[in-house]
Image (tube, rainbow, N blue to C red; front, top):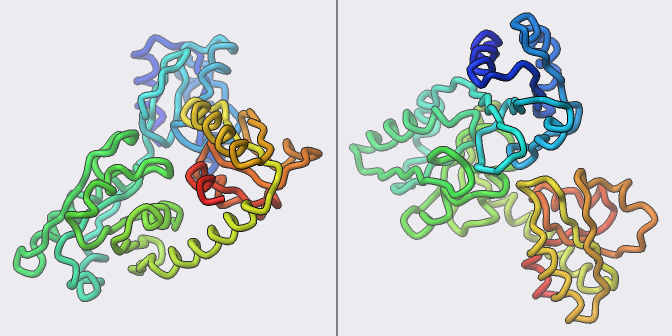
Length: 314
């Protein structure tokens, strides 16, 4: 990370004391790469938040204000347009990637797909235009490639765990979606939202995966959760106080729907949603009105976790 540039950007904001917020995967680098000490050499007092950080939906602006910081420096994510108590400086984290060699390697597998929508995460957003240019020139220019503008995310083609709007509107126009990046969470999340094939060009394994089998597996697991939920009596409706994850109206609606079905329901509000905070509560099932990632953590919570839209199936 270019600490000199970051310090310059902070100084332009007139801030002499800042709170640094860094995602888990980069937190060690904040210390090992001397980001904190580097900023302090420039006369900027830097405090490092030790709280977990899950994205730009999870801003520690209230803490920054309470600590007397004039700026929250949020590293690794892009602005989602959330209003905050102190200004936020977003220091995005990008990874250089030339996708063309991998696309050439998997050209035979991509050949059947003539209309493709490209998506990725912030880290690899700069790979989309080169990928589009290459794919559109392939097969004598017979491919059409789309990159959509998202609702919550910032850049064309960018997806979040809670925002696949850069892709969903193109389902009628394409015969496949292509996610370029790393980690199965986002391509699988997209596959669960659309009916067309989702291909995952994994830059770590250098393989091209069709997410169809994993999607079917997840659908079976989710159906089992919903079935178990239908037999449950007492429900906890989870709400996070993180600004980008606070869906209180959805929680109220979910509670009413559960009660109309003769279920007991209680809205549970917390910042970090974790199993230990639910210990001692006699709950059979949880409804996720917070972050989509929670729905993958049923084993950790030892209870089925369903989504608000599943309540109608109980």
